[in-house]
Length: 244
Image 1 (spheres, rainbow, N blue to C red):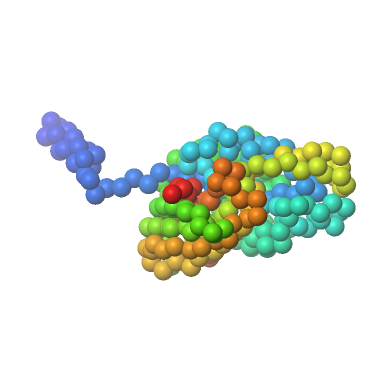
Image 2 (cartoon, rainbow, N blue to C red):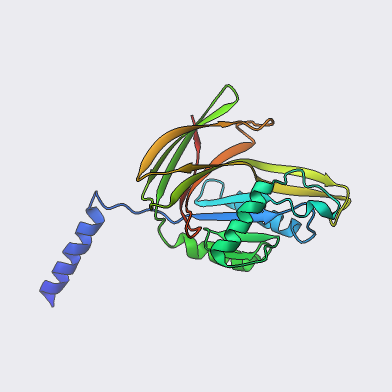
């Protein structure tokens, strides 16, 4: 028994001191599908804003997509984009969850929840953080002549992987005059203003140029990148860009 314990201790020590062994932290990408025309969306917007505030420098990344299918109900969402409606329908196919709805939160591309269900979403965050990410992502941005040059390095991808780069406005307010939220001033957080997809081949690094939004400032915006399997929708890794 004594010899066995010595062997186990020795194996444990070697594993802890092995410089080639990497531990990839768990990550959580929360994608909220929301709209200014939806009366049940403001509580979800506020919840995701609170979670973002708690994780400014952590491994939790919040992305809010404003869909456009509520626009015909009397108020056109100033952040609405048909591209984000299409993305939500992609998730409906990946998850087998049709019809689409708001507010919907997708966690790491794998499971969906009602966007205002704080208890369930926080449990999903804790669960996801306990598992190591499958891919490592590193991003650096440099602003030059109204362009954001984003240098990326990705390790640990699958053959169906793509890198998605989201240019995110950290917060905004909107005075809604019609529709279900008429006469309310709504607060929004982590608004995706642009989303660019890049094909990846094996483990890869490169640089891509993105046009800055008109109101862009380094203080009010950030770039979040994440690797997604296009067959399943699963998100394999994510990072927040560092500014050069």
